[in-house]
Length: 266
Image (cartoon, rainbow, N blue to C red; front, side, top):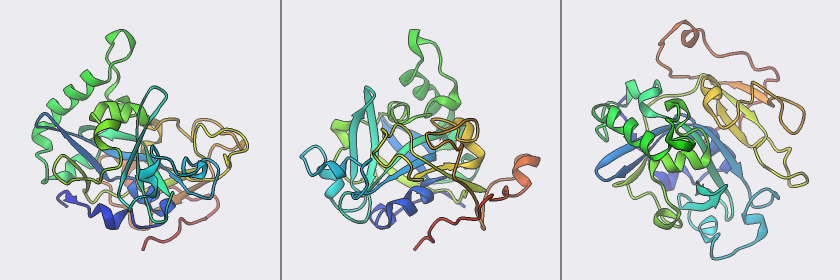
């Protein structure tokens, strides 16, 4: 299907955990100097007011005001020396963190995007701009698949800045969220990264696209997390929409070891 703009006020007006899972495969597009920089979300985390890992649990401040604004309001802050992109969800203080993405030209959704921003025509200029924004130390080239492989890398590659977008909505002109029709074959549900001990680090509020786990911030299938498990659940999607680019992609979703389902979308 052609890429279609998402009504972000409605999309984010749901439980943050549902939104985080549903963000996988959605296309985040930012227009910088007349060039669309676009990446497909492959990893997202949910944060709730009542749990101790969230910024909102520390109380309202002017810097955190976006967390208490209408669903779909962007909340940006500095993390690890870089910008971080979050969006408020239903219920004051609840939000999702866009943790990692894959540049659109490298993702199967790129073949489905079709319309909307002139994505396919801008594929190579888009990658060149992302590379220039996000080199490794010493100006060495960062691998294309790692350009958005973390929350600050993502913001750097897409040109998203705290001073420009914090406490603002998606405007649909320079910043938009789009649906290409891509749906993951399966979702990994696991614990969030970087949560200090004693601050609800055990909660499984991190969601990763199974087929792109190796490109996310830290591959949950390749190691152990703070709870001693590599992941909590692998949840097959009953209605995936992934181009059959190779035999692996056509093989169908992997089995879920525990059969625990994500709460149904509204």
